[in-house]
Image 1 (spheres, rainbow, N blue to C red):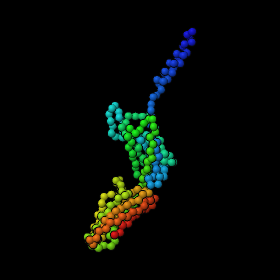
Image 2: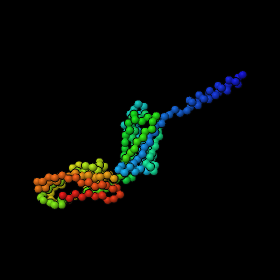
Image 3: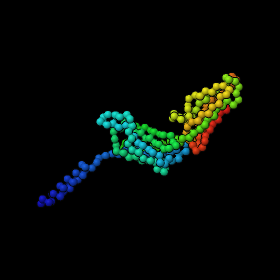
Image 4: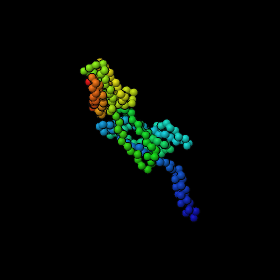
Length: 219
């Protein structure tokens, strides 16, 4: 008679024990694809790092802390899965040699364990260019050129400057060597003043990251 009830009771106890010991965790999935800006070609073997601004013990930490890191596949795809955490924001950081570093901040409200977060990231390839500007037909020492890179400039240490540049005099002749974005156009707008005449011009060149690029402006 006792055995009749002992077996079901043991089964119930075992089931409850298994349920109590089972980890009740949720996961966040960040999927994406890394492409070359300008060509949409996949970027393989790029290092993708997920970071977060964690909230621990009700204290907000403003600095991003690395959580996980993977490399992209041959088609530029990647997937990062982490346990759900208390965070105010996430950041995707992408690095590969000969490409400009890329980062993108994701609001924590846009990420849920119920959905897979997906995005396509276009990163710029690095390229160098020589910009030669010279007064080819001098008129007087009052000759003046004011020019600026309006497309293709950047804010890195050796990137092409975006500030206005001034050239004055009959012998103005300078070359600027700088870094810019491959597979995109570099565009320079200039205003030239000679013999009390003023005219504007625009010069551009398509930048190939695998070649020596140059742009010459003679005025």
